[in-house]
Length: 119
Image 1 (cartoon, rainbow, N blue to C red):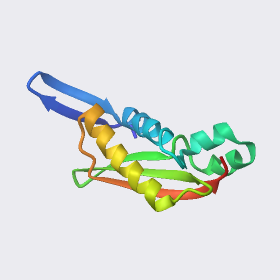
Image 2: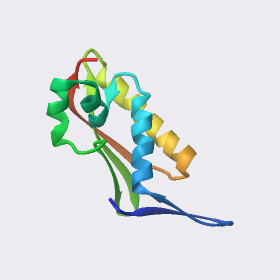
Image 3: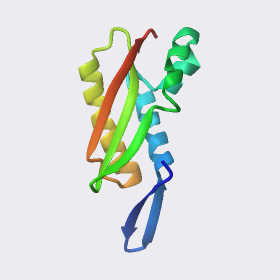
Image 4: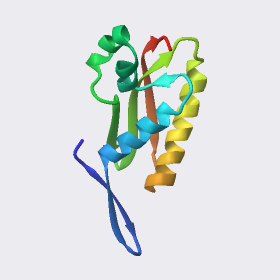
């Protein structure tokens, strides 16, 4: 994940690291009701924290596939959350925020629900 995303403008080139995009996505997820990154789960609970050890870091990958920007997220749902609704909202928010703050168009956001945790 050591790549940089390049944005060219009339003023010059801007490079945004994949790590910055991951952090931006993690912040967006932390603001979503009913979804948590593996890191958030590890930090908030003892038992479920052990389950999330298999997923490193934030559980977010930034991929470039055939010239397309794809963000893949392994997330946890809070028990009682309507997962399809929460995932749909998170996808829209991630696309909007990455476009707004990083100037990048996200072609696809893939959310994999890796488990269910209690709040």
